[in-house]
Length: 165
Image 1 (tube, one colour):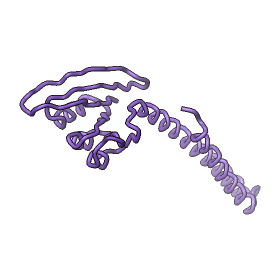
Image 2: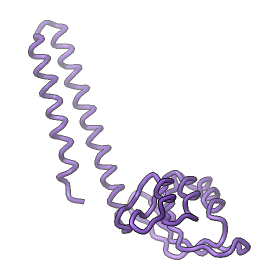
Image 3: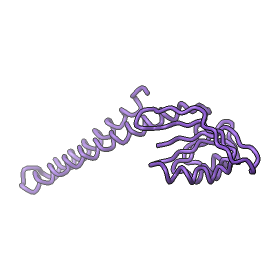
Image 4: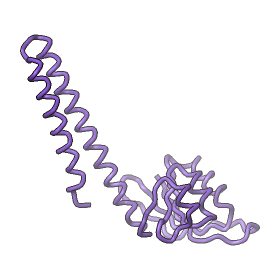
């Protein structure tokens, strides 16, 4: 994934792109601080073809088309314009770009918990189905198992809020 943060634009005639800070973070995420002196939309369209996923971070009216055109549009909520916020998929409310990595960590952990809940639920449901079809589990046992399973998955999901990021 490439995350682009454009810092400024200049007149339309100049065809210049300056890549300032580039760093590789975990999970093959590249964060580029870019000063773009060309049409940002064309710049984003060119990068979409070259990368697996593209995230664009912007805060102004001139960023809204690029935010909309990227795979993941991110806007800065505190100082950003309303148009950029409306066009984005993610809004960072305190204008701290480092919160983006925290959001990625939370989403990966959430996906893992959802997968755990899904596998555990399907395993228990299939077990109860087999036991009830063999006559070992009664209807009341199945109801209690279903209710207990729901409570266990809710408790497991609470781990997302309790983890320190």
